Amino acid sequence: MKICLVATFPPSGRQLNEYAFYIANELRRHPNVELTILADELTSYDFATDENGKMIVTNELQELPGFNVVRCWKFGSLSNPARLLNTIRKLNPDVVWYHLVFSTFATPQAPITAFAGLSAPALTRSAGFYTHVTLHNIIEHVDFAATGVRLERLFRLGAEMATKALLRANSVSVLLPGYYQTLMTKYGARNVLLGTHGTFSPVLAAPDFSKRGNPEQRILAFGHWGTYKRLETLMEAFPLVLKKAPRAKLIVAGANHYTKPGYWESIRASLPPGLPVEFRGYVAEEAVAELFQTASIVVLPYDSSTGSSGPAHQACEFGVPIVCAGIPDFRTMAENEDLAIRFYKVGDTNDLAEQLVAVLQSPKLEHAMAMQNYAAGVEMNITYVVSNYLRWFELTKCKELLRKGKQFLQPELSLDALRERSPV
Image 1: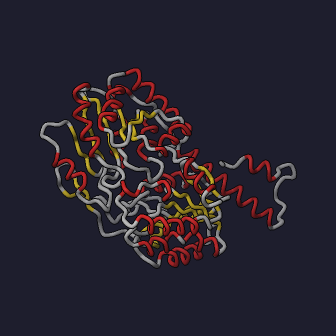
Image 2: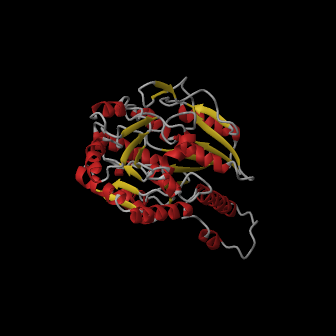
Image 3: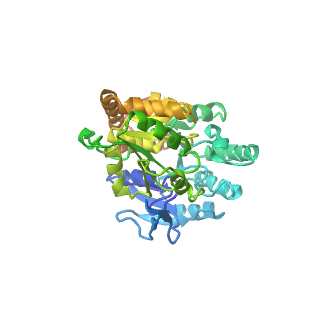
């Protein structure tokens, strides 16, 4: 099966690049898959800041070895749909698989360019290629007040048009049950699947509790900071945590969101001296495991949901308890995937501190939550996630051949039986 994966891809630092890397890494392990990644063009370099405030290069112009990458589209370019289609026609794949958020191709400040990019899946399908979209967020579930978007009504109208265009693909998968319900009810979509974000490793190692709480009880906050992931409430809560859990230390890891340069640096500058808070800034991929393996808690200080949480699933991968803002999408995610999460009221400093302290003061609770998340991670590792997609693509291929009247299936293998095998 020839697959073109359309996504941001390392060393690009744009949104979803890490997720696309792990999907691509798993795909290339399948002997019957011929993978080409249609990725964004690289800028010369991107900068981040280390814990001492020193500028470091995070995006060097070196392709990752072992991947077939064609960089045929550019962030902020109106020509992306045409460039993608020209490349796809040359490669002639069996499946074109898009991984998208609404800002994949351009910022909200360039709505025409963003919409043009999001129309690419419909254009790909109209050219005769089977097209699947994994849509990582939908606008109806975004709190614009929290993300700072202006002209909300106009933006929502444009986003609805873009959603309708995306639904012109052969099939669309989303990663949260609420997204699935919205697309089915509001848009009347009948080509939507409910998928799973999953963990990033094909094989998960059980948590090593000897690495935790010796001597610090590390609270890890991990992400891209400044928009819907913010640190103000967490910084107000942390001194309250220290009063009851004096061995606690807060680790803030990850770069600023590209629209909010200098955000975490400003938070760090506002803190009183001597507070046990460490800012790691950008974290190289090979250093991520150590962060999670040594954490007693992963905290998700979100103001709004814009998709299934990557750090939550990484916490499951390494078996770490989670404390998270009580956003409805995340509550549903926890219930649907059987995650161990203690929720606090969004923006409530005291409630956040209480939930963190409850875990830090109870080794029994910490262990139980860690093992529950680890068990959930085992059930949704990246091999499972990608295998489900490949089964769906094969099922669709079989259905198309049936429509064309080609009799290649065993007589006893009915279309109903095939449907039962689909990941839906």
